[in-house]
Image 1 (cartoon, rainbow, N blue to C red):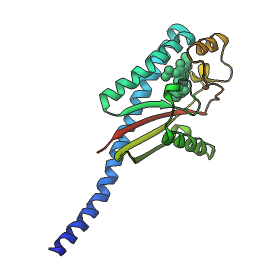
Image 2: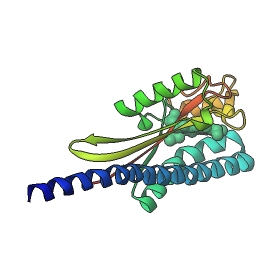
Image 3: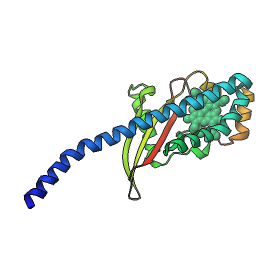
Image 4: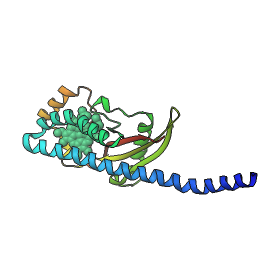
Length: 190
Ligand code: HEC
């Protein structure tokens, strides 16, 4: 009997390693897909708003719709979905300790020569006894249109509109190619 159990245990361990690997790979693929959907939808709304009413109007659209798009992606997928940064515009996007650490590492990886477009990180962490898959993907600052509202030379009416909605705004002074922040997605897996 003992031999049989030992054999079973060995088989279990042989099988469970690849299963665990493919579980994280599947979740990683799912996270990557959701980032694409989230990013495309946000950027679409931003570009449309910029074209139709200029930057000041686009700020209002962004402030109302960024959260809505996140909720839509969360509802359709069962993942928690957010954007975060070390220099926040909306204090509601504050990183938790895990996210802050990953954001610092993203900046270090960029300084070490990695392309910001490709920087991502995922891990299975245990939070309050629950296993959670966490995935973050860096958001690079593109010259257009990001610098209009996050750059070093923000036009006066744009700065004024930002001051009104975000009195403690820190998300200015970026250059093209900087990491503006990250998408951060999490999913409970047991
Ligand atoms: C029309 C002005 C405008 C433009 C252009 C713009 N943003 Fe923003 N951005 C905002 C506003 C407003 C918020 C706050 C949204 C909110 O309340 O959640 C914001 C928030 C963010 C956040 C969330 C973190 C935080 O600081 O609160 C990230 C990340 C971000 N922007 C990245 C970008 C990137 C990348 C681009 C270029 C593709 C871009 N933004 C272009 C206005 C803009």
